[in-house]
Image (cartoon, rainbow, N blue to C red; front, side):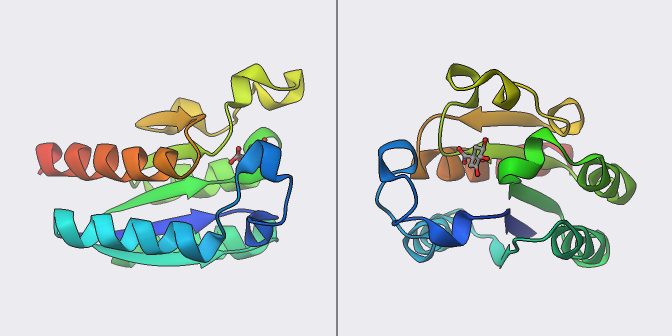
Length: 146
Ligand code: DQA
């Protein structure tokens, strides 16, 4: 099973960026934990981070041919990007949306996700653990569907 892990804008700054909200781990440290869990589960993960909407859309379109599912933290694009939602809808791959912070306990504009109606589900509020729970959930979902 091949899974694409997508990180949206500003997540490259993790570790330095608002640590009281997003924690002190870097993106590299989070990716390392995801790789360790993927090895344990027996799946392959590919990582991509972009600060641009187009970069994320190109990665989603590319995954359509090569991946079985997507684990995505669309970051601020969660709340704004119809284009990323359309890309996810076009490739028809199962995806799980994750967030480090609990977007539902923050500003009102973060309560809306344009992607989540298409997602298998959403996990938020657990820091690095959101990604690990999301990976387990996506893996089980794909396993049970095949
Ligand atoms: C985030 C939450 C978003 O609202 C925010 O714009 C981010 C990170 C999270 O992981 O908690 O950049 O997706």
